[in-house]
Length: 281
Figure (cartoon, rainbow, N blue to C red):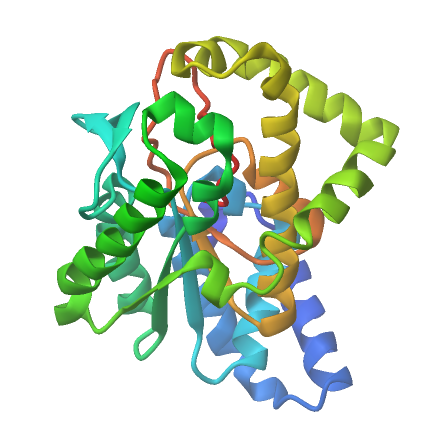
């Protein structure tokens, strides 16, 4: 994509990265190359990446890391029809979202040669009773199928040199710390209003999956809190997340992390949003 076609004010991004380099003992001669890389990454990414703040954050991560590390949270292997989740059950194979991410990730690595990629399967979802009930499996079966899915995914991407891990192994506190983050969000009148609006937009799909009405708001809050927790984690450890299309990407933005939006959806297009059943992906 040509810089002139992009809504991002690249001169301001360049100045911000030069300032960062000067104040953090980074060679400022690296900035032009980072800007070139950024314009190419933005060119393949979706709308959520196309902001000055997000581009700057990605640029900072590229300046801070000699070898970029891409982290990709993905939903478990829920049943699907074509390219859309049906949530009628859970398998132990390669998740649909992994397959949808592969072409985008290969483009990213062509722009960032030598970069690392780690796929993270949301195993914490096994601990949600209403989810297990909705898809018709016990927590034990859910956890077993996640383990099978991780093995299958490792085989699937082995030729690409990518890593695959369980979210709970890679991200400390993804279960223990999220309730505190959720409490922080609910304590903010502005964020609580956002969460209520998001819950209203998802009411139809929550009901279709089989969630009881008293679990709707709780699920929305848990999802938002996990996005915030993961965004903060990635920012601290200098990772660059890649994420599919979801309104939850707005929660990444609130953490300041630089992320790449893969513009693919795996949800009912009539609803234009997903049931992120407390997952980070």
